[in-house]
Length: 110
Length: 307
Image 1 (cartoon, each protein chain N blue to C red):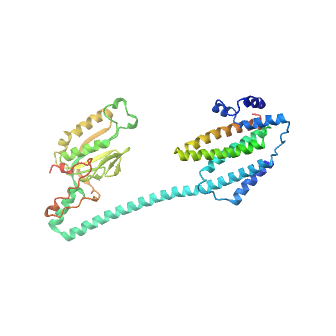
Image 2 (cartoon, rainbow over the protein chains, first blue to last red):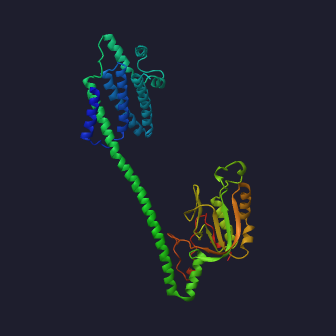
Image 3 (cartoon, rainbow over the protein chains, first blue to last red):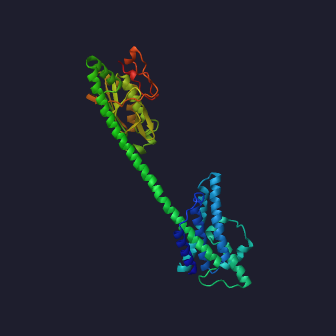
C-alpha cells in the first residue's frame, strides 16, 4: 500500500514540479522509463513470490536505468543509432512480459 | 519451486550459458532468489504484506517522478511534431495555390503581351511573329494531322514475365513516347503535343519512377500524341520504326496502339521556355536563330520537321 502511495506521490511531484529535461538527456528518457518499468514489474513479482528484497530492487532499478542509458549512448557514438536501443527495448520488453505473466498467475491463478 | 531454482542457479552464478533461454524462461532477476535463500540461511524474516524498506520507498517515489517527467516530455513534444507536419502540409497547399494562380496570371499576361505586340507591330511583322511562335511551339496552332493513341494493357501491372518476356512491360514507357514523337517529327509533323503538352525544342520526355514526365509535368495514360503535318504524314509514320515496333509490342504484350487521321486538331501553346544560360545572338539573322539552345539528349529534335 505504502509503495503505491509512494508511486502516486512521485507522479504528483513530477507533475507539480514539472522539471525541464535538458536536451542532452532527452533521448535517454524513454529507454529509462522502459528500464524502470522492468524493475517495477520485477519487484512486484518478487513481492508476490515473497522473495522481495529492498537492496535487489534498488540496485536493479538504478543499474537498469544506467545500463539502458549507456547502451543508448553507445549506440549513438557507434553510429548504429536506434538499433541498440531497439535491442534494449526487446530484452526489457520480454522481461516485462514474463514478469507480468507471472504476476497474472499469482493474482488470478491462471 | 523458485527456491529450487535459486539453489540450482547459485552454482552457476554470474553468466548463464544461454541468455535468451534464461530470459524467456524466467525473466525475474536472479538476485531476488539469491537474496531470499540468503535470508533463509540467516533466518531473517521477509517483510510481510506490501511494506517495503525506506530505500525502496525513495526509489519508488523516484520512479513515479520519472514516469511523470517522461509523460510530460512526450506530451510536450507531440504538438510540436503535429504542428510541424500540418505546417508543412499547409505550406505545400499554399505553394500549390500560388503556383496555380501564377500560371494563370502568366497565361493572361502572355495573351496581353501578344495583343500589345500585335497592336504595336501591326501587319506583316505581327504575322511573321505569329508564324515563328507557332513553329517553335510557343503559339497555339490548328490543322489536320494524325493522332497516335497508346494505352497500357488492361491490368498490366501483374503481366511482368510470362508472355511478355522479351517485349518489355505491358505498359507504355517513356521510350515509346519518345520514339513516337521522334518518328512523327521525322514523318513531317510541324507541331506535336502529348496529352495536351506541346513539345518544343527543349521539351523532354523522361520517366521518373512510375510516371512519365513531359517537360517535367506528369502525363498519365492513355496517351494521345497529336501531330499536325502534311497529308502523307500518316502513311510515312506507319512505315516508321516506332510504328512497326509498337505494333509488334502491342501484339505481344496487349497494350493498345492506334494511329488515326484527325481533322482540325488544336494544339495548345507550350509554356515559355526559360533560357537561363543561352542568350539570343544579337545579329541581323537573330529572328531566324534562337533554336541554338539544345535540350537534353532525350528531347525530340524539332529540326527533323521536314520543312
